[in-house]
Length: 301
Image (cartoon, rainbow, N blue to C red; front, side, top):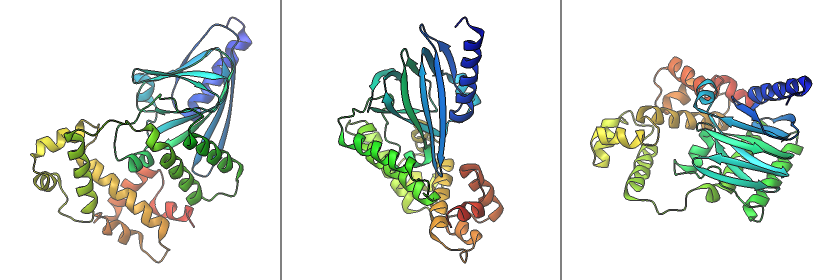
């Protein structure tokens, strides 16, 4: 990469990547560098088409600290090949294959020769709701031969080509994508006792989300464990009990906002899911979804 114009092109491409896809670093590989990026936004669908060669794009702990980790990247390989690494796993993607990358963990993508792929941002909240915190296989190649992969490609293409999608419809397309791919991405191991216990706790929380008594002490007592054990169980998943409960309540508030009309007061929706203070509800909602409850509801009208 001796040519000044080529180096400038490389820096511009990396700046685009950082602006659109989140913080990444890069290093050149041998051979000619190609770097092109096209972005597309269809309501909730945030897509980037990357055409590149001769470069290694990676995300270390440093980039993760400086960026947003509230996503999974779903990579749809269109042309050529790419090498993807995460969690001590490496996969080679060929045209028609799909893989998943967790934005909260270090990863690396190599493009030694010309490659073209689409990166679809999947909100972490949707993946968490669908997968219920079961282990996800990242950088795992899903073959183009799999019917679910073929259906996902078709759903992606039809969603991209349909400019009339509403916010609700585009979010439904994202959820459908996760539903299609979930069985292939989830680890296939039989859940050990601790994993079953964790799922039982999640089910207990969901059952009592509207109850003001839903606190760590009550959950621990109902589950037959100490509060310390409950905290440790959630910490092993990278979670905090109180934060998880708040996020689940906010997700159900969002669901209610999408389904109810303007006659339903915002404060009433928050109150029904455990938010006694409207100001606290509004602040927490904006932190999770990026907009106020009122603006969120207007988007789905």
